[in-house]
Image 1 (cartoon, rainbow, N blue to C red):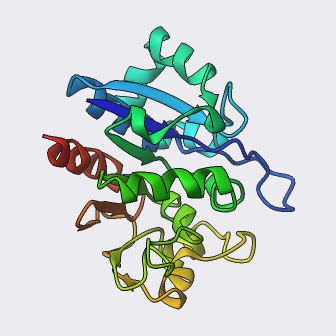
Image 2 (spheres, rainbow, N blue to C red):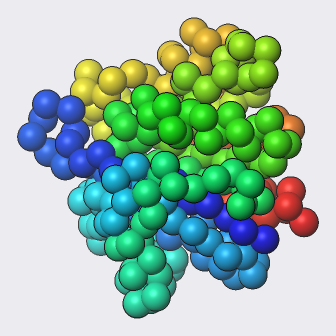
Image 3 (cartoon, rainbow, N blue to C red):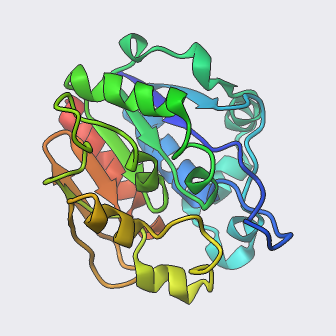
Length: 225
């Protein structure tokens, strides 16, 4: 089992002067789900090297057993500091792809033609694909073979308008996932704010928020098995 994890390279939180990036727990929990399942995991990002960490995700209140495990894991830290360039990876070399969230992907990966083409390639190959929290936003420009939006008519979830309001970034983010998905014709679903909630539509697996990251990874592993 070979898993590709795609992380953001974007660090600026709009015009706020604050930093963003990937959310630590949404990386760490799936990473160890994959590793503990015996998978080979390759980390990639648009710019390569160390992806920017959302500094809020490093606060004590957001730490979990898996983030503590990562912070004590020199091998995992080295892998994260040395992500390969996104334009160097090929779908053919992997069994699945997973995108952790954090606000960063809304700016770079959602607009990256390299990322869009990669997801389309995995989808056309019939391989499971997973996205959690803000990462489902990277699907906004992804097309199905028909030329329609990939998520049109599909069951999906992602960070809710209510959750974005809770973190007071509604007017900062480039788009709201809930609104965008509904506008694209998706059957957008959501659970209670901040509670685990995932949706499986065939091989497309999406999770609503950080609490959903482990479940998305487990669903990907289950599909591969």
